[in-house]
Length: 196
Image 1: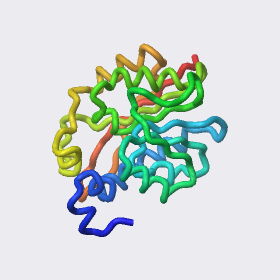
Image 2: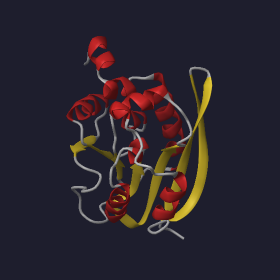
Image 3: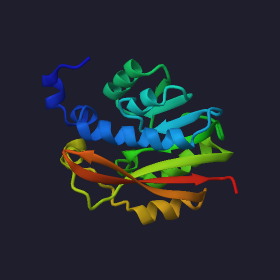
Image 4: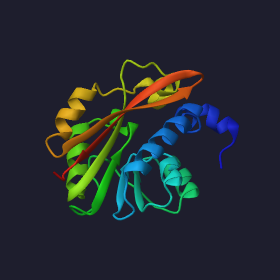
């Protein structure tokens, strides 16, 4: 694993070992566990350290990540498959997955519309997409440190909803609340589906 010195000196790793990240993933995993069915394979774009896969270990999830360090962490945490790849150019066949998940990674993807289009193409025509979004007005020190302070691609929740609506029907917006250093943090969970 990593030493505390290595974690403290690497903003990306520090984020994935933070209380904020662990609390957020716990909230997301709970939300997903209530809505996912056992059948069907799942793709998690921007899976990070594999913590979501670890918490949802009864599901067949393929994690996509472009960082070798994070892939190494993910492979140690979960028995699921983890693949190095880009969200804008997914290495999978069309309609290969029943469910897609895109986490906070949507904030870090330069061409997020292409990433959503790619994700849409690998989700079956009766599949679902779950997107999680940190509201841009929330100031979180861990996110500021991530990617050397460049966390925003100027995406906002309305833009994300409008673009996802081109491919899926919005089923539910849900505020996920969790505590970070005694402060309540709210992230938005968006569930969309191709089913009517």
